[in-house]
Length: 391
Image 1 (tube, rainbow, N blue to C red):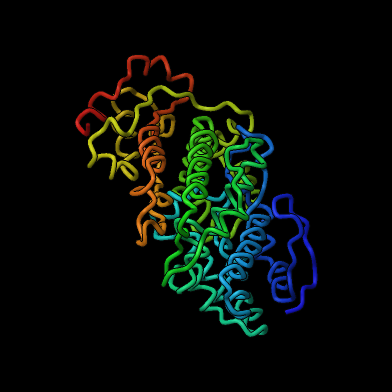
Image 2 (tube, rainbow, N blue to C red):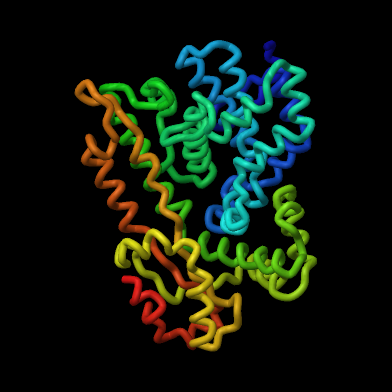
């Protein structure tokens, strides 16, 4: 297909788009992503982190094309992969992953919502008009296709783009990866993306930068406090009937913020605190590694029960104390590499990879946050009965 337009991107330079991609970019579904921040409330810590899902999607499309050319795929597969990269984030809710806990409890995920948009809206008509099959694009995004690993896997074009893009906007050097060398190092074996022999240092460099980005940017304690406040505000809005999950999935950041500002009671108060940067404070932290393994595996999802106990014992109103447990994410340490004539996991052949994986596990932290006026009440708070029995 003929390239019709060039979009200038600060990360990848010139990104060429053809007629089908231009038609898709101009849909309301894609334009909504211009108003959804890539990194939730990270801008409260790193003020320049205002990049959006829209530009990230363009970057993933571009890299999907580069990788598919590197793997010498035919033109039809290249086009399908580029389109899947472009559309893979259509289903993101406002502020991206900030509301994942709300949506996942009801069985929603941004991939599933993206699939529904591709199959059930005029996006499907555009694809068919240009000789593409909507179900094939959906399958690529949902991981049901032979080539899905290029879009989503241990080492994929999604991660390649967001690590480089996020480090650029955060103003840190941690995510500065050598994309050209990394793309050269990968190849497909059956249904799996692997790293070629003699490219161990390339993937180790990616793991180092990923580790630093997670510790200093994605899991920054102030960001986690702000997103906990935001999550609880939206949870209350949903439970009070102020918005349905279906409506939430179709909104952008501006629409949700306006709804919260025009609400009453708790949701409005939390949003006002965020607007004025009057954030909750930390009253307790402990490393997840200090708890029993069975607790670590089930902590995510049990926070509300622990919160309820603390409300009752300390006389704190509901919604003014949060238990925060970051969800572990170690998939990159499972990537396979050619080593001495066989395929092995990176953490089996690299001492550095094992050290980074251990470091990430040890740094995961459970936090308890509360409104400043309740800090005195919680002055003697320790993990006590809320966590001790799980250690």
